Length: 460
Image (tube, rainbow, N blue to C red; front, side):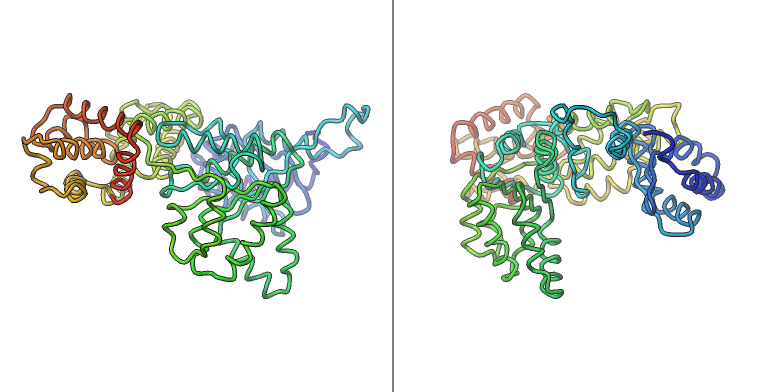
């Protein structure tokens, strides 16, 4: 950005704010996080700051945004909206804000496309490139990419379901980024069903229902997260029914997410359930250990910024956090923040990670599925005594039940192969590996087996 676009008044405000920040947060914190901040752009009531890298921008936004915005507003004598971006992202924003009269003249045919207007609710980090694909999410990822490449044509509507923190929202944001990158003029609307309901109620109250309908019925891609919150809200379901019909009939794309298959959500009108089934439904399961570790390695490489996290620490996180990837990534972000702020010269060790994340580990362990519960539920499903699961008998029905229980234990717990074998009557890790392969192959070739294993995992 040209320096004369930042006014001297804005520069003075920023300098005063920095002085106050130094006295409030102290020298160490200031030098670690605020000394590298630069004023990139400003308006009457806005200020854009650039940080040295993606992690610094994220850390400041998550931990110091309130105090930063407060000090800038105090220095300005008015409320100022503050934005923080990584240096490269900030330069892109600055270039987009240069007034037309300052840009060199060029023939209209060569004029560049306008930058995509990404909705503020879309996370800039949630792209297809940053999504780690594994067996648990491969179909969902492929379907989302197909939708992004052929909006309104492939899989309309796309319905993504799965438990919290497994990547549904990431894929929805990735679709928005992909569409806007290839068609900056596309109209994208992303909203949670809860906010959709709140906006609808406000529109009714204020007499602005026509504006509400215009906003959501004039989009090229409508993405609605967590549609389970529509349950029991009859008027909102009625409104969304007509919005769905208008978008679908005009060939525009609808993407929905839910925490379970739509036919398992109570108090959703059947006509909506039917329409959600017009396209394709894909589920996201909890990722296996290898995928969880790959996610951590990718995030550490992206946000690490020179900080060192021992491989054993990533292994620990991958084994401790098995159900909620968002929580697992949050734990890693905390460790990277600690390393950057307090312990930048040394790697975060296994001992230090256990100490820093003790509370998070306790919370995760409380929600874990234990092997005994898996054995009991599997025995109930096959109508056998739970003792048979860990016994020595090998009739076909008992053997397959035992193998399925081992398979699920590997998927849903943090135990090693050796520990799983020990808990199944003292069997060795080779037996567990064989059981996992047998069940994995059966799931691929036998629809009944796949359904049975999926049912057990969802029940657990």
